[in-house]
Image 1 (tube, rainbow, N blue to C red):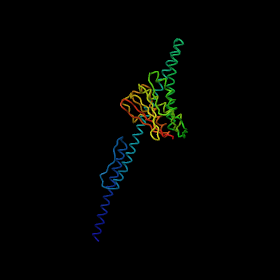
Image 2 (cartoon, helix red, strand yellow):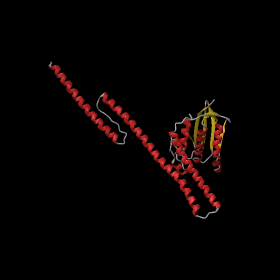
Image 3 (cartoon, rainbow, N blue to C red):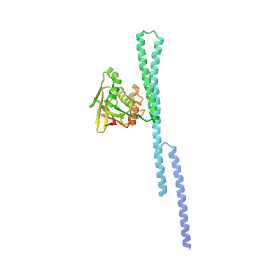
Image 4 (tube, rainbow, N blue to C red):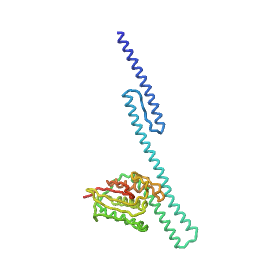
Length: 299
């Protein structure tokens, strides 16, 4: 009987010690967790107690800590991009507006010939058109992110839409003695798409090539099985261009800031391509940048 009593006392003492150690370890883990959460670090919680339950708890805590830190990092990056976007948008809106006001003030306060006034009004018109484009791009992208309206598809001739988009930019390329070379094996390539959205995609890509390249633009259409591919190839002007990020909203190469780029054009193009069940990607090839759009072919 005495032996049994001694054994029970030993077990009770062991359990008391075990509970004391577990309680002390839990307090230490809580203190360490509070410290990790209060600091902007990637630190994790650890334990030296050999216990499956404590180990599982620490693993679970670390898993959630990693997830929280990842979301905080993403949020911080988005906030940084948003602040940068607001700064870029503010600068881009202010530049043509200030320039236009300067020309208007000049015409009102000085004696000018009718010819000089016409030249200045032409400059004002160009600045205001740029301002209108920036505002449209900003609100269009905002609408894309918030609009869940069903897209209406119809059978359209892809070649015709591309030629129409090219004609919209023919004058800009011609005045700089640049060309848009378009090649298609067929005069008629029928796909199910939305004409307005597709035209906007092509317009953004052609405009992007015009602004951020100094040579000709090649556009080619090729059929690859049950898919149709559209290639946009032009000179690579910025060596530090990150093709993995160039379709991200508000991404800009520093040099391109001088050309009034807000980083929305390609983001809009990508969003529209995805909504039309297509894919878009870019790659560097020697001194060229190659953007490829892929759509399912309507047989």
